[in-house]
Amino acid sequence: MGSVSNDICAENGAMNESSGGNVCGKKKIEWLSVLQGFSMLLVVIGHVSLTNIPRDPNTPLASELERIIYSFHMPLFIFISGWLFYFTCIRKEKTYAEVVRAKIKRLGLPFLVFTMLALVLKLMFPSLMNRPVTTQELIDTFLFFRSNPLGEMWFIVVLLVLMMMYPLYCYVVKSKWLAFVAWAFCILVCVYPTSLTYFQLNRVCHMAPFFVAGILCCRYGWHKSLENLWALGISFIMFLLWNIMRVMFDPMGLFSVTAGIVFSFSLCLNLAKRWPSLFCSFRDYTFQIFLMGIFFQMVVRWVYVRMGCDWMFVPFWLLSVVIGVFVPVAIAKLVEKKAPQFIRLCMGL
Image (cartoon, rainbow, N blue to C red):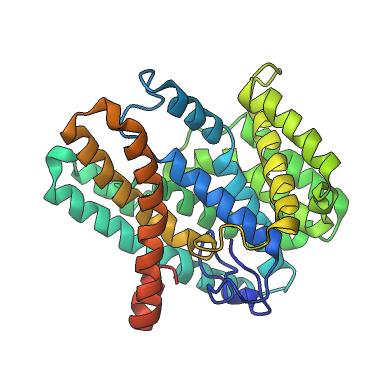
């Protein structure tokens, strides 16, 4: 994601692959930039885990917020990636070779670099890690891609697998009938996914309908119907019923995910009309926040645990969010300005 300018096909990574130079003042699709910032903020908040216990009952408000975010935020990122994939590649009729080269460079290289960094840190501080480095984990990380020392990296593997099916998307979008058959098939494999974890295929199955839906959303302009207050109000009610109150029937979680995606799009489409510079301080560096933010949040978690002061939970929670967002942005800006091109590529810039 990211700001979209005339050179949108530069493709600067998973979440800012259309950044157009990482400068807020450049011509861009404002609502997409706002959506970028909003979505990345959800990820950073979702990664705050000071007690290292998912949905810790001792911190009910933070745990409930975490539950709501996790009900839809990663499918939202996949949906946006599909939207951008159509906008930057399919619509432009790029060749398969061009797409593969660009994605390996923009996604694969940072994936490798930050995976190695996580491995080094695990070897240096084994007592602080939940999972030790073993031979099996190395095989699963670099050969089968079903594990990673940095857990969130599954997202990049899933994106790469989905994007490697580029010729299929180019074929099905030529016909509405084919496109919706493909979408229906993706929903089927989401409901009845494979148990294979090689190349994260189980997660690929789960995320495929949202990636394809993002492609179709851009192809047919579905998002345009969400840029009014009526749509915002209705989508908020959907979000309230399915994601917050959880009073509606949702056995597979598809309705809550859909409600979260629709509400996020409508919210950001409407916010961009009134506050186009919202999240401008970090929205063009979402991929760098994704890659680096978790490391600094782990430091905050370690300090909090060492202090053992439960009454400091709220300040440390806020500190984790601020550090998780703005330290990676500061590093990315410095690297962007001072570092050679290869280092910039290693950080997805």
